[in-house]
Image (tube, rainbow, N blue to C red; front, side, top):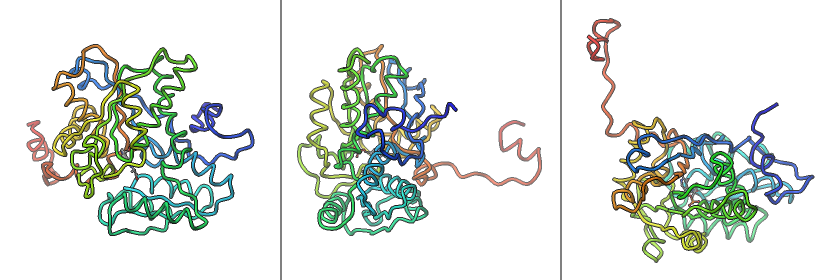
Length: 351
Ligand code: F0G
């Protein structure tokens, strides 16, 4: 049949697996590339959204997790561990179920969205909350995997990056070439590293004429790469990217510099404005961290840094349903009406 087979089967020759590798998959990837009409008008460019919330667990993490869990299983691991701001733990928990493995997750207490916590719980992960931030969780996860029989599936595991680079392949396959600019939210900086690797590989093999400039955006309260120093107490409403010391910091700087791009910051206010614009004007519901890419594009356009006529892809990394609090907060309350057509019509402004 013609069903999308998941990123490992679709791009097997470009990934570190052998002919005999038994693949652990939920048929991740193959996500929509959606033309963004309003963003295109605002920027004078051709803007597309790579909608990664359409992955099986609702974020781009599934691309890396199919690789990480496939390899962990191949190497005989019985248990995996990750630190997470929520999405990695949801993904690891689901793929561990498929592989028959135990999954342990370390999350910052009170700082992960309810939907993501629900996913890890329902998939049966062992969850430890840490009185600290993501960076503390990652330090602990590394220590545990160094000293105990448990495989680390954070993006410091290089096969995670291998899986995530397939998003760049899909974009070039769909557009027929690389875009001029690729825009991403940046947290632990694995994804910008992965896209840059994917674009470079396709260009090197002649499957794209060139590579895009990579534009990354951190939240202002969690912008260590922009500031050039570790942020000890990171804060932002975009909890997914609330990270003060990104593991792939140097790789992100390399992607920025080699591509001729930049890494900048956007405020929580700008993130929420982009979040509402995406939902109310493009019909795409993402989580706040995902809107950082679009907020960044709009900021750059306002600053006159976006020449018209370019092809631009913004990755929107996670599904809005994971963190619906921000959709409800500040929105008008639904009104209650009797079971009466005239009364309903009046409230709807139809009468
Ligand atoms: N967007 C979302 C929705 C994320 O969950 C993350 C990272 C990012 C963007 C940033 O990607 O870290 O590769 O730069 N979430 C990780 C997690 C940290 O634990 O789920 P990055």
